[in-house]
Amino acid sequence: MATWPPGARPLIAALMDAQTRFQLFPAATSAGTTVLVGVSGGGDSVCLLHALHQVADLWQLHLHVAHLDHSLRPDSAEDAAFVAGLADQLGLPCHSRRLSPQELTHRPEGPEAAARRLRYRFLGEVARAITPPGQPPVVAVAHHQDDQAETLLMNLLRGSGLAGLGAMAWVGPLPDDSPTNPSRSPVYLVRPLLGVRRAAIRAYLEAFGLPWREDPSNHDLSFLRNRIRHQLLPELATINPRVVETLARTADLLAQEARRAERWDRKALDQLTLERTPAERVVLDLTGLLAQDPATQRGVLRQALAEMQADLRAVGFHHIDNILARLEQSTHAGGPYPLLDHLVWTVAGATDRTPARLSLHRDDELPFAPQHPFLGTGWRQTVGEAPIPCPGQLQAGRHWQLLCRCYPIQHLPPDWRTPGEPWRAFLDADRVHTLALTTPWPGARFAPLGMGGRHKSLGDFFTDRKVPAALRAGWPVVIERAERRPVWICGQAISHQVRITDQTRQVLQLQWQRLP
Image 1 (cartoon, rainbow, N blue to C red):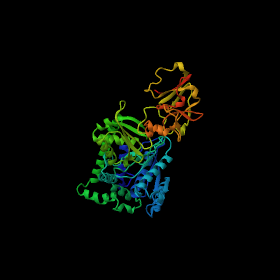
Image 2 (cartoon, rainbow, N blue to C red):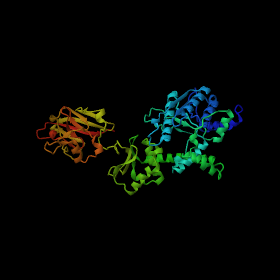
Image 3 (cartoon, one colour):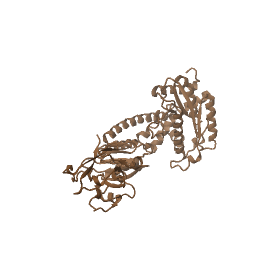
Image 4 (spheres, helix red, strand yellow):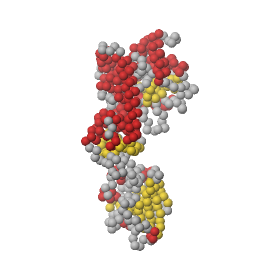
């Protein structure tokens, strides 16, 4: 500490302690760790950059500077020039970008929230670009202890739960950085000054004679944070002079409780999950869910929404409570009901084979995976018409295959007319030639067995058979390929033209089989 001015030593000591306790910058490789430092030009971020530069050799840090000009103030370009000059003085590379007004206007969340979201997106993009292979991208920002206390009070006034009251973490994922591409590395956000008071930051800046930029909006009392900073916290300090430290400690304790509750909720989610397809659907045992206490019910639903890649900061108490309130009134089958953005929820009643189920799913996906052969809505685009070898088998998806064989009429099994086996069909082999598997298409018509050869549209046929609308586009259909004529709507009926008659000599048998 002897090499640093006395006014800077408390902050450097706190920074060293944070590195020891939380391993903010673990050595990724023997070559050190690349860190992107977000710098606005304000005193807090200037202090962070300078302090990290002071310990960079000791900790083997390779620092880069990032600045996003939000264009929200007339002098924002001067802030960008100031940050670029500071980076140049320290001999550090600087990455900057200026937002256009169009990127911030007409946003439902408002310009300030949009600016925050775009700032984190920018930091994530730059961090990924500069980080060498083998090291997770790391972004450092200058949130401090006073910010932590203010954030806890803001979230408390908004009615947040445990996770919100835990406020900001020392180390965590970068907000608004939920890549749908799993090959993309997650970006880590570290807050080295989270244990440091604002006064210690000012003392550090003065000790080194560092300039910084002032943002007049920090004194605008139309913003909730500023009213908390300039009005509420000073009033609370008359009751508890160490209110900031107390609130920050409370935030840490609540964050620990939130992590404990999250582990419990994840375990409960695993126990209650009947089916899960990442980002498409999570199906829960409804009876089991409702047997939990209300807090666990809410926690399980939040964790299920997280698996659906929902932004949990946008999931309010009312989103969860609306589901549970409706389920308290009735657990009858129904839905889909709107939930959030592209997410909906659906209830299915109990059957002989399955319990009552609650599905959280995308509005363009089925609420429940079919328990019978199903090709999916994308079959026609990705496969089209798949030839069916005979004899042979055709695998359709991960779980089913279609078997085909041909034999003399004398070998026709005696139970071939059994109505309880809709997923096998017996056709007159001489009335079909080349078969293919596909899904319904616009204008397709079909002559079901029992209608004397009369045709009807597949849509009307499905309606008559009460096939759910969500299943129709991906329903398996066997066609006579040359004429593009449906000969078997699988699981429903064969065509009148290919029925077994007294004149049939050869039988073509089709049968679906579940794969192990």
